[in-house]
Length: 199
Image 1 (tube, rainbow, N blue to C red):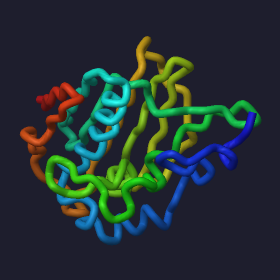
Image 2: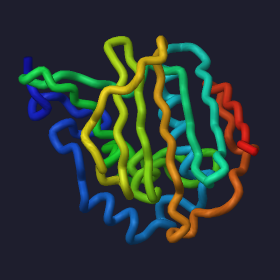
Image 3: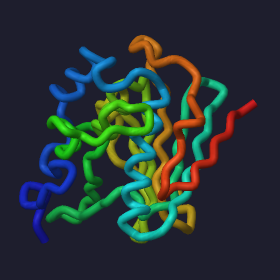
Image 4: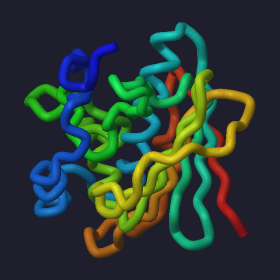
């Protein structure tokens, strides 16, 4: 069994679970990466849509706007990829705290709001807190982040009997990201997106 140093990079570099310089660059110039909460939700939905398309079937996503201003996005995909290192420890692909290598060059695809896609690290960096929970066939795990930096180790989560990912985050109003979620933009060929608001 080989470890993260030897694992091939597809979207993220397994060997570097936290890229503080990258996260700080996003926070230093937030409007370059997002102009509001709608873009943050679109960044999360893009991963679910990508996976649904790869599997050749429509996916389902539930988007919930909570009373505290936080937003959760839950999909029914395979769950964020996890592997085991040489010691048998679970390692999750570092999608929150590192850059997606596909989208930080010129020519990144644009999302429904017209802004370029940059990846999940934008959501994490611009959120006061973010909880990432994923359910896979081999287990379930969760981790919390503060402005993109892990606030705890990866921990086992209660299984649901299915697979999928939930990204629950509170956009930091200090970055000018408060505002209404534009439901008209939350559509995708490969996703059935269902939006609801608490209260």
